[in-house]
Length: 241
Length: 241
Image (cartoon, rainbow over all chains, first blue to last red; front, side):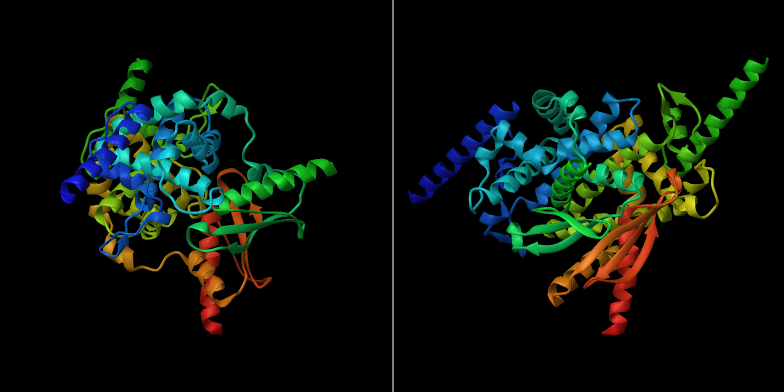
């Protein structure tokens, strides 16, 4: 009896998740296990298979690469006369951690994420991670072409305003480095330290202009922290100018 | 008459390239223009379309993303119980500039690259770039699944020894940062400057250990220069130990 109850319970959870995916992306999952895994943040992973702790990290790695390729293909075709610099920056805007967690919340994907940690710090990165993992799951479940169509039709064209993104100023690091080169000022990005452990680990970035530390910022990725610190520096420099 | 001559000449060139691709990858190109473009390094680009100079840079951007995704998928399936850290490092080994230019020469792709510059400095990067551009061309010409099979069967499994790669020590930057964390030493990677312009532009990286500059290196990419400088530092540190 208990066993049957358990099976029932399992099926109900599967059904719930399957419906949620259908509502968000418009298709029914084939292999539901992949989607369950995609929402399992490492903070709640306990089950081990051959020593590997079952979390969404591997799917995130796969989904991150697939998403980059699909967005690259989309931008390559949408902007046939733009150079690779433009395409690269546009892609960073679309697949940035901030953009993905925003998307995740906008589409209601965040509601499906299982994680364990204080509501703020982990939440943001957990959403972006799960979003990428979900792309990985869709790719494995349905193949590249299906996954590409979902990303283009259901995510990019449905939830992102490419024209606004195009005009939004984003890459403060490259802006800062360009300015430094033009104005003959040396700009240094230093990893000044790492705070915390495991999935809560953050990187502290210091920015020096002509050897003098102007700004610092911390984030869950070095890139993220560099952007935040570069933005602070940029604002300070413009106040001085 | 001149027109007919020109057409003949064009066809002969197309035929030559088409045969070369057939010999290297085992398939006949559909849209030969894509492959011609893939081998056109920016140093020989002159023709402009809507202000965009026709070179292989856009294809390189696309191919780089596709190659990363295909290699990610390959490693994900080949190593089902390895964590994303291992998968990420293995991929960096496979798609690193050095690895791609070596592959390019091993497969004879380098013979097809059109570039203009001194034989050494440009050559290496031009080969890697063209190799990525070629992946982009194959993807646009034949689609993802075909491109994936070519990369896996004709490149990875045919020309790379995954086991050797697995055991080869590669990421000196992360090794150095791990050591710094363990030994409570601060490690800084600084972009100390940029040398040259355009496609000859190189980045100069300084590495500081506890504020003292230990090593420097330059390369066509910041990542590449960081790895070279990290390797130098690693060797120096081991001499001291």
